[in-house]
Amino acid sequence: MKTIILGPPGTGKTTTLLNLVDQFIQQGIRPKQIGYFSFTRKAAREAATRAAEKFGLDAEKDLENFRTLHSYAFSRLAMTKEKMMTGDDYKEFGKLVGIPIKTGKHSEEDGTFNSDNEYLTIMNTARVKRMDLLEYYDSRQNILDIERDTLYLLSEELKRYKKEKGLKDFTDLLEDFIAQETKQSFEALFIDEAQDLSLIQWEMVRSMWANAKKTYIAGDDDQAIFKWAGADVDHFIALKEEVNDIKVLDQSYRIPGGPIHELSQKIISKVQNRFDKDYKPRTEHGILKRYSDVTQVDMSKGNWLVLSSANHFLDDVKDLCELQGWYYQHRGCNSVPLKLLMALNNWEHWRKGDLLGHVEIKNIYEYLGSNVLPGFKTGKLLHSDDKYTLKECMEKYGLLTDKVWYESFDGLDTVTENYIRNMRANGEMINKNPRIIMSTIHGAKGGEADNVLLMQDLTNAALETMSYDPDELHRLFYTGATRAKRELHVLDPKNFDRAYIL
Image (cartoon, rainbow, N blue to C red; front, side, top):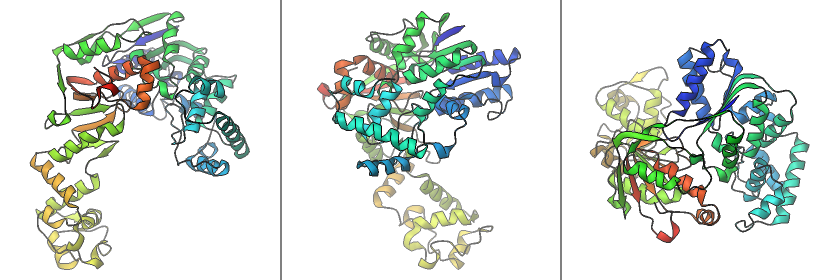
């Protein structure tokens, strides 16, 4: 028996799946007989953690089959890390064939090698799409700036290199798993984020559900935004012809009623191939605001998610945050390093009479510059097990100041100092996570915030995509718009001819 569960934004898809897991466990089915597979490691870990807490289980031992497909293949094939291609292996291969390749690694999420080399990216994408390499190249030659013959030769050389070294990549793992005759049997099989699976992953899933009594395939085709990595949403949609049942979760607990819901529905209605579904927003009405310039956006209060189609479009927002003294995060890094914030916080507590240990003092000394005697900057004379007052360090260990941080931390540049002073003057809680998170729409998949700022600018590649596959961009901006829980703020593009107009 196979069931599709469609989960529009904020409808509680993961909770629904875990409730089903709960039912199976209550029926006496052992957790190890349940397979729960998600597209990302983060989602798989979250599901395992929630299930472990709910059912009083050990996430590692009892829920060993709560993982990504690549991780599961790795385990079932009894692979070791030593047998897997690494960034250093790719660098060595690059030297052998005369092409520079930056160190990177495979993603366990989509099987694509993270590299700046377009040849490698094309080779991997063709494989996860289960397409002949040259056939795939020919289908995209209008946007590729690489040589056809070179692509083929590099592909053959990479195969030879891996064979000689006895190494595999993550796509090899899926191919080997599919080729296995014996598969594990499951009482219940769950496939989450199904809209993001590539064709090779679908082949793996099909080989698994052949040995499962019940299979649940969950996802939302409207949020399929990883086609560039090989995801095949059309395969997911086509499954409606061969499943026993389709269930739609029809109540969103995130999307407010009114203009935000209306705009998101307007966007997604443009998609040609999709499941016919609808859902109800929250009764609370949201707010939609539009701006012609980023300086008009007031992000002084509340939690914000700032989204764009590419990271470099976020530069103006970063400049605004730094000018206004707003605490933000970009590419997973806080605007002020945590190490500096800890030093600042510890310094203030130290001045008030608290005792600090060797590690905290050593960290502070890095920012004091000339306010610590040269021979004492490393803090080596401090005992690791002892704690010290500020007065003691001034008398015995080379500390030359007890003034406020901005008068003492002369190792800071002026820009950073002024930025921190502005943040503190604004009442920013710099000892907590930043209020403002900047991300690409792809990077924010699954995230949400009370306030979302959505930028409409497009890269050259996205503009090309718009000309031959507009559905991909419709889904992308639908995903961005549906991150907002209360207010959606739309920023006009710098050039309307190079934008997705909401």
